[in-house]
Image (cartoon, rainbow, N blue to C red; front, side, top):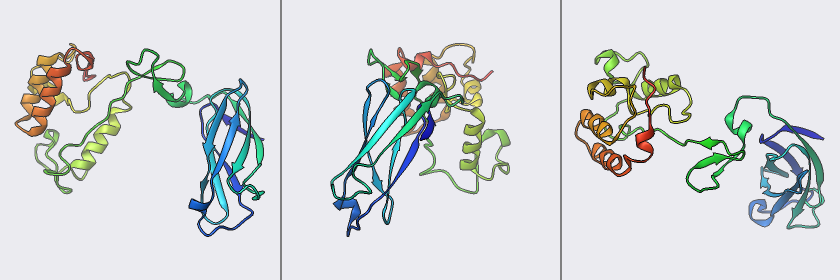
Length: 234
């Protein structure tokens, strides 16, 4: 019996007894997982070359899970009617997805959250300069004043800076609001950002289509989530 922590992925191998000219198109395999509380989860298996098929599953409740496969080729004993059991235990690591569960829309449908109700703040980075102004052998970051970049180039510098900031959790900082940008705009990092703050910061960047776009977004949503961002710069 396979043991796997809650919310963590496990992979089950199946081996077809038959041979097929086009397994990808000619064969469908589905595995049903039955949980300790009556849960029923269907997962499709995928062809992995040759006679190999695999199905991946993550338990959503602690306890025993029984599984059984169904194949469109019912006479294939390697893919149809195969069964087994998984024992799901508690997760003791620090990955927030495994601690709180898969993402979903909150009950009030106003934000994302984990399966256990823990809120999830989704914020990503966009590297706007990559397609037009960036060069692989140069970097214009103000911290080295136009001299050689210690990271080798602008993209490498961006990646190193992003890694040093750590995970984006609870909206603690907005990655495109650098400390230099905040200082140039005259904004105190101890106050919450409002629409005028965002607009001032964006104007300090210079004129560009991206600036206009973000200024419009800031004005449109200044009373929403942008107002609640607090850059962690001190």
